[in-house]
Length: 174
Image (cartoon, rainbow, N blue to C red; front, side, top):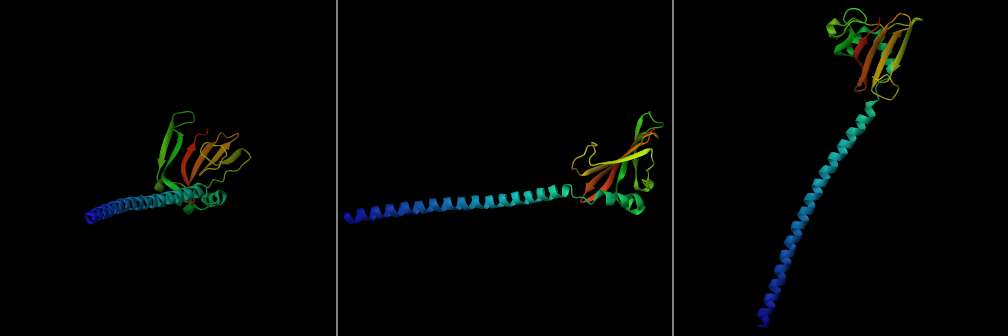
């Protein structure tokens, strides 16, 4: 009887160990699975962080605007290549003070603009955003206005992939 009791106790012990081993194995598999998911999530997070960092650094790292604009106003081929067509031009419908009209200009309709407008009666200001306030942005506005002539033109530029492009115009002078 002692032998049978010993065999039963030993069987139960082995059985318990076997159950424990299976439970432990299942638990370890779950941990491995969670660990793999965490690695995947971590890789996704790293990729997103890298993309955000690239976007953040690229956001305002366009070419030098003054150098760009010098080429833009002096080279007609370069000028056409740096306009996002079709481009909107907000202007008066007929005469100043009449209704405002928005013209859509296509590449084939574009006429070269030299921007050489510097007389005693004209002022040119370049702003670094469309709100006409000074701050670090990916936008520039060339605002030309005539002190005595009544001229008022705005040229809106935006940075895309490190390069400046004319994206909109507004001519609401007299």
